[in-house]
Length: 204
Length: 185
Image (cartoon, rainbow over all chains, first blue to last red; front, side, top):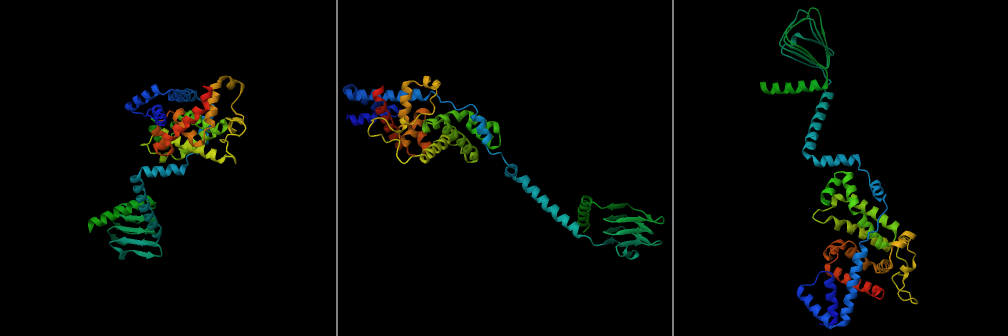
């Protein structure tokens, strides 16, 4: 074995990277070559010194950990919100859907400022501006619904009276055989719309 | 374990991250201290390393060892720092008139207080001087090999270089140190 090759094998040996067969070849060479033997001893000592001395740890200052923790950027609220969204895609989709529904309903509600009168016997009813009057002596058979207006009942109604976003005045002569309902809140209005839609669909 | 801690830290658990800091601060400090031979700069590097780890937690791939990842960040920061402060002449170049003495040994070491002087044996000082006189590309490899006990494969992962290159550098680095230490051993 040439000495140059032997040196290369020595390094491999110190790196734990030399197959057993070559280890034996190296050993044979070292036994026969005093120069290489001396060199191997030096390399081995260097290796050992490096390992032993390097493991005497240099220690960082005690407050380093707290300094590191303090230097970290604080997590932003916005970021937390975004990660929440990322983690709950189904919930996010559902709430966006609900929001859109709510927005459209609310805009419909705001647009609906017109006076609307619904009922089965409307020719008995007198309408003056935004006031709906059931005159005394007249009888309305069926339900009466008034949206966005004042309602004054002097006569008789054989059914329910529903007033949405308006006022109801009942004279002493008035007689309503059914239920009287006043709706003026967005939520109950919505509820009314929804149930109304369903019953309409059901009756058609 | 590090994988679990990084996941917790990513969810915003500050205590989990503090635990990671506890686990690795001394290792990174030691690495930086031996690379830069300066206490303040070493602490700066440790701080910067953990800041980068924290910012990039979401990019950490847990198929990779956490130690490999953090050593890569720390080593790269040290190499950058050395590159920036590289003077117009090389400290590695030996001076003509005094053989064996180079720029590094002429810079007063900043860690010598009466107490540490007692603790530092002659051999230790010789070894540290020898390491400091290694060219940077050998120094980083030797420090990872001996200080952090990394295998050749791990060093190649940390530095992003082929194992054969790492092997050559370890051999040359060891040869360099042997020549420096030889007469003193």
